[in-house]
Image 1 (spheres, rainbow, N blue to C red):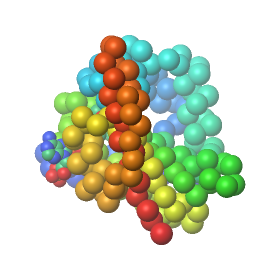
Image 2 (image 1 turned 120 degrees about the vertical axis):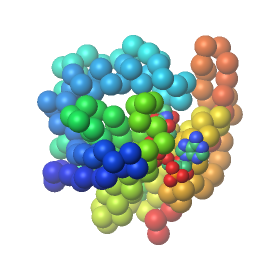
Image 3 (image 1 turned 30 degrees about the vertical axis):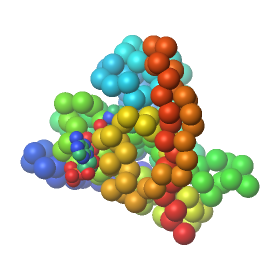
Length: 182
Ligand SMILES: CC(C)(COP(=O)(O)OP(=O)(O)OC[C@H]1O[C@@H](n2cnc3c(N)ncnc32)[C@H](O)[C@@H]1OP(=O)(O)O)[C@@H](O)C(=O)NCCC(=O)NCCS
């Protein structure tokens, strides 16, 4: 994949550096993911529950970087990771025109426009792919911040997976949202 780089001036005056993830980011990524897992119940893992070790994460990042249908986009402020996001398409021909998005922002940086900036880059990547027609994602039904962000980016609700998430024995629906590019 080509090198991806972008700079955004945030509402608080700080610069957000957006670039694709590389193998060298593995340790910082794990540290980040283990922290944000505990900052909300809206991800697929909790605090300290991220399941890959550094070598596995390095391998994962290498594969992501080399996959032309994937952009793993990190957001940095002052050299620290403040956001991890990804868009990825299947390599199976019959569904290769569908891409899936995931995103997180570190809690102390919420509401500064970082989520929006990351989503814009992922959507532009999909538009430029020449293949993607539909971007899809799933979100816990009580995750208002995320749903508002996705709606702002043009996503619409297309369905629901009943009781999809089991968080400490409580079940929550997953809202399915799509952005149709063409
Ligand atoms: C969802 C998440 C990525 C949003 O990131 P963010 O950087 O705070 O988002 P932004 O600052 O770009 O906000 C984007 C828009 O969302 C909406 N929004 C965000 N927070 C809001 C709030 N508390 N109330 C109302 N609208 C809100 C607004 O429309 C906002 O645009 P605006 O600030 O220009 O009005 C972040 O809260 C997060 O990482 N949460 C935990 C992990 C998670 O839920 N990931 C998604 C799993 S599906």
